[in-house]
Amino acid sequence: MGEKVVICAAVVGAEVMRDRSPAVPYLPAEIAQAAVDAWRAGASVVHLHARWPDGRPSQEPAHFREIVDRLRAAGCDVVVQCSTGGAVGMSVDERLGALVEGAEMGTLNLGTMNFGDDVFLNARPDIVRIAARLRERRVVPECEVYDAGMLDTLRWLLEKGHLARPYHVQFVLGVPGGMAGDERNLRFLVEGLPEPAHWSVAGIGRCELPMAEIALRIGGHVRVGLEDNLFVSKGVLAKGSHELVSLAVKAARAAGREPATPSEARGLLGIAPPVKA
Ligand code: KMH
Ligand code: ZN
Image (cartoon, rainbow, N blue to C red; front, side, top):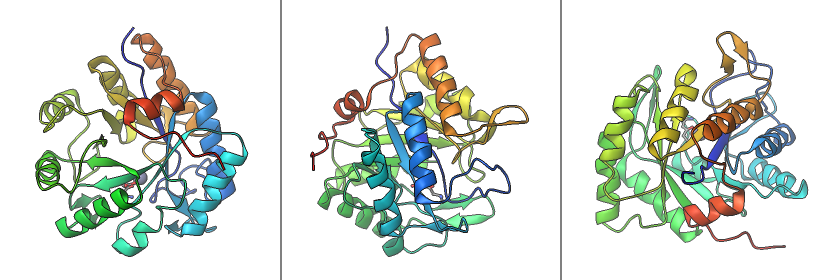
């Protein structure tokens, strides 16, 4: 039996709207329910964005607080990871709004890139600033790596002391403007890590499950969910992120790996147990 696998559910992102799938949650109550469903299906981490009621992306602290409160009120002990990436065009101040009380992990996007037809801006001083805020708040960084040069930024952050263990690395592959999601790219990135680190892969679109299967085989962790992919199979929309988590659980067991519980995930990722209120 291989190392337990941390399955992260990205239950909603900033881009995909309900016209593409009725399952995309908008309200904090809907996002919290999607996260609870994903946790019940086997996710040990949830990656959170928030939305305004009309679906526009939100980094409002009140929205994130409500999601976290609802999760905990439902008895859900999933690891809470909040997005500091937000949506393209948001200021860093706005993006930092997601780091509310109860956030255990926070994303740290490691570079500027084309993001579809937009530009996702992450200038180096902004990366340093977000890393400092994560450190101040004792939130474990998850470094989002979309392209190989971002590993050099990771090495630089470590060398300059802007980042230190524990941190986690997420290879987000298949964004138009970043590296494609295939095995050669993933192996190249894993070999390029500046030091041994826990890593995971999020394949965008149709490469979500194939990339998860490769990661399971070569010792990584996985992220699935509606932020990254809407379909369980060609032309069949997922009813929610929980269906994608169930497919990841099945793939993990087929690869001889059991899903980690949230407390096992905290142990693996160096996250302190949540403080009981
Ligand atoms: N919405 C993307 C532009 C993150 O969550 O940190 C950025 C993103 C990354 O989703
Ligand atoms: Zn995200």
